[in-house]
Length: 371
Image 1 (tube, rainbow, N blue to C red):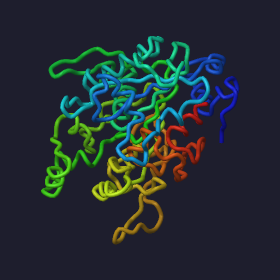
Image 2: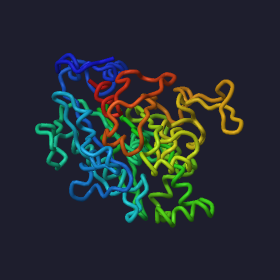
Image 3: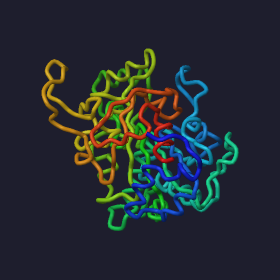
Image 4: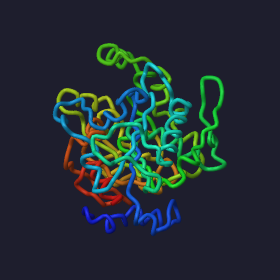
């Protein structure tokens, strides 16, 4: 739908025109002239506050098929910039998404980046540090998407946790509203928006789940995993207000992992990216593990075979959270989502979906839709 054009031409992107049309962020002249800054928020299991772990997250890989790939290779167009946010999402620390060490730390770093202070990393791509007059977008993966739902959902006055994060024993004032001011959009890629069934099985599974966990995973139900369960008691959408501080665009993956690792999908209801149910990634109303099909419709089933007309559609009127929009449902797995390891995946056209970047991976789609 779009192509890489000259800097002045390409700054009037489809998404930029949409958000400017409702009066967000910048004036049209400013947006046309500014560069894009993509603020990157990593997912679970990364000690992103140490060394280059947060930067490496976007190019590291679990499968040799994705060696040498980098999210930034497909994301960045001429003149585009990015900034890395790093926080501690490891099991050993066990911080849920509402903690000062997670939501609070992410927020403070976003504010500093928007002020033009840089991210403190040496970018492999020269001249890509963000400046204060850039157009700001946020890209979040896995738990990072859950983090951004909580932050954006409590950036509006009257929300239940407005500008508040938490320690083990008290609350902390954190300016979510300042962090979200001027953000043109948040992208959730493979996001644990309403948790993952894998966390359900670790924390509240049956004897078989416990046996598999013991044999292959060895993970305990620490607070960071506990708050990734699909029950609404743990979902970020339960603890936000009726609006978000920025529009939230969702990209979901529905491919199993390569090789024997693909067996993980058999443990997850409906379609998934190997770790997270598609219904959770797409922020569908109802259970995060409802059996949504490729086109985000739910059907009656007999012997596991879908039949008849859809009984539920995960379209914009059936989203689980406010101001959230489907961007794409893409044939890619959880690992490839964050390192762009699958160059040109297939995809499914979804109701009310956005078509810019069709045929590209998640990084390429975002780059196309915002340029």
